[in-house]
Length: 456
Image 1: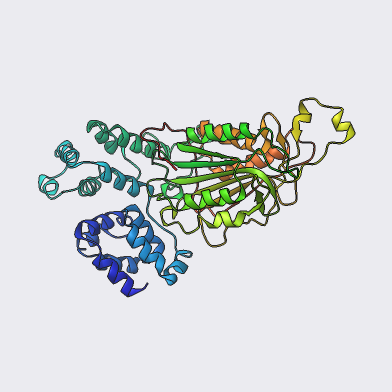
Image 2: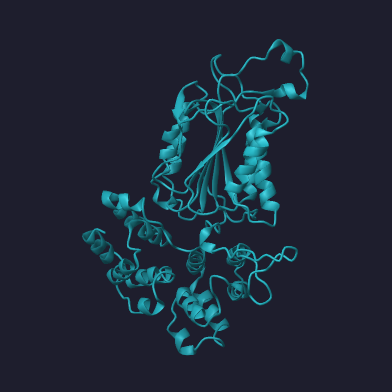
């Protein structure tokens, strides 16, 4: 890496911040070696020895510690941006959870924490522990907590009367692989097969409350005669909004936007600080043609341009960015036979044919694009119940959230492909097309929203 850049970063970090960075690096550097580090430059040397001195890992560290200025320094160096594409981040959900708890604990709560564990940790070690991170490090040494066992931590958060942090730990516990009485992984009693031990680092971290925002762009009314009104779109809005709210996202609905307004709104969204959010969801429901969506004024917006807005947002590095596109093409007139059969099925309008050379970004990871149909094909919409793709998508995401299995979103989208393709209301076949550069598994579960709802 650029040595002058690292030297400038070293100058900008105080001893407290260096200690925080060392704690975050506990999973990749030996604890004894970390105890000897006093300056950031010493940490950089150790990271280089371990093969983790790259801008992706440093960006994750600085994003976690809220040092946007250091993130900008990394971003300003073009060579480091190139390196980012090739090197993965490594901060575990466990380590990030401990850091979040540290951020939210006041000094008096830290003293309470020390009091609660003083019968299990040597007094001289607790006396030297000035922060929650110090206490957590001592608890790890004593075997009280680990990435596979946070029961003691959950108990401590309850005993310190910190309900939100107790919920954070409980959420992490719920995502751990099930264990048997002896601490091992449970077996299937019927098949006598051992369940695979799943590394928690394989999953995206979803611990913030709220998780983030779910932006829904829904165009129903169009000017001119070329594009028909998209009847049923309001039902799609409602289904998406209700579902992602249950997943812990704040739904933000924008209706009937022109092409310029779509671009303007998403540009503004891309400038936000997403540091305290786990993910981003953007749903676009409109007419469309190959590689584009249509504003209510009949003008075009390239999908690639919309995806590009979120590729280099530092506070979204390493976080899943989900795009669901229900776009429509020109309406297909009904035949005379179809017009005489105005039953329930006739309310289904072949209206949402998509595009698309809007392929996933080849460089940036952690992006999922769920498209309603493959290129040059039609996507269908019921004029009362909403789009077939959105109906099935919402139902399958809800089914997975209610299931005891931990099905990730790619497994869910495979089911969506099958069920849309075989849907009883579609006269002609429709095949959705997910595209992704996700680097971890994403499992969506229902949560309870609490606290102040952010504005967007």
